[in-house]
Length: 66
Image (cartoon, rainbow, N blue to C red; front, side, top):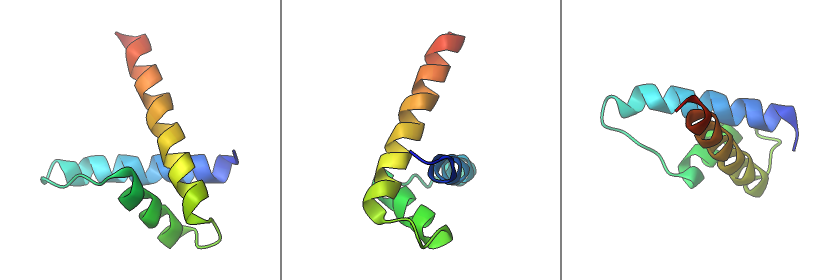
């Protein structure tokens, strides 16, 4: 998977965390759509896979900290 997709997925998820504090939370599909809005050349299915991978990596990192 390309770094650009993963980095953009991470950027969108972190931005969403700030929105979550305001009561908003987006699904994987919603996050992927935001990624595609930012990077129009990335197909939606690849964006979904990138968001899912970022979520898994972040979960793994959190479990390592505990």
